[in-house]
Amino acid sequence: MQALFLILNETDYLEDILEEFVEIGVKGATIIDSQGMGRALASNSDQHIPMFGYLKNFLDDGHPYNKTVFTVLESQELVDKVVETIDNVVGGIDRPGVGFIFTMPVGSVYGIGKEG
Image (cartoon, rainbow, N blue to C red):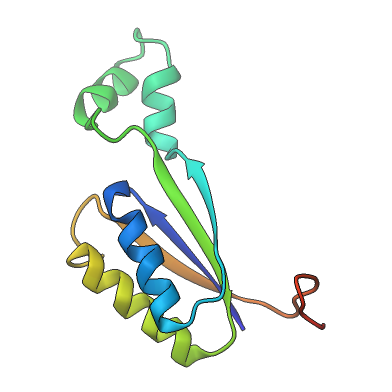
């Protein structure tokens, strides 16, 4: 089992991604509002610190927040399908500013109808 995390900066793709998840057999996911460290520092820091002022000017204010989607997937095959699906929906996860995906191994899952 793998926990898959999607940090999605281009949030307009969220609904399409979730619809595709259902189509390929993802049984559930959790979505949380999130914000990157650079954006948080730029928006909350003292303007007199040159580095943060520059960072604020550099960042696009059109997308101050992102979505973090995570799910536990039972097989590597499903992980591969999910990554491929996300990549197709967003037109390439490697495009600058879209977001990124990572996975982590999961030892056990408890609750929601799962047995350890």
